[in-house]
Image (cartoon, rainbow, N blue to C red; front, side):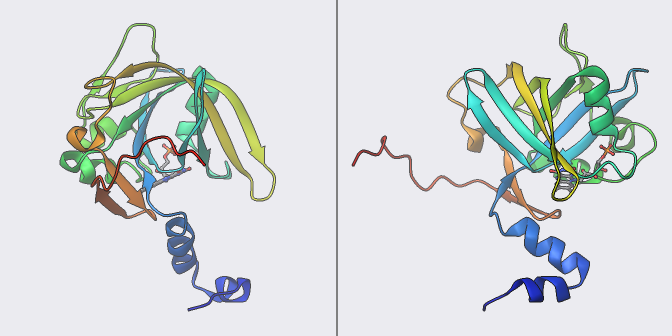
Length: 194
Ligand SMILES: Cc1cc2nc3c(=O)[nH]c(=O)nc-3n(C[C@H](O)[C@H](O)[C@H](O)COP(=O)(O)O)c2cc1C
């Protein structure tokens, strides 16, 4: 099947969103934990998370245009702090539910538990086996569509061990905005040389 830009434009909006968010293949899925200046906590699932560098450890994630109130973005701008918490199968429904636009805290709404670490403003999700905290480095406007790339430096991580086994940790992957996958290792290969 061949699709052109004409076909994309003719699609129902939801069908186009589904295709566009599945085309990159499987993506991570983390709950982004933030806190407002007034102390209100917020959780939202994000899948557009990618590694940008290792020294220091930098991660980027894309936020939708701020045409409506975006708690995650606003809290990150206000406090410079957020956490990323891996989603596992035991909490996938609650994690998904956090994408609903609650006026209050998604912790309260879904029953997920918040925990804190010294010196870090943003809340962590107790139920996640892998969780880490970031500090805002850059906020990059993407003029083509009004989205923003939020760039953060990882300052703290809580993991089962340093050889991070994501299968053992129960970490899930995602596509689109509604489908979640468990992981299955196919190969671990040596550094490739010509
Ligand atoms: C599986 C999944 C992945 C998502 N990924 C993103 C993302 O990468 N960026 C984004 O801005 N919103 C993403 N969303 C939508 C947000 O979770 C949703 O807009 C949420 O209400 C934002 O909450 P906030 O206003 O509290 O920040 C995703 C939703 C789901 C269900």
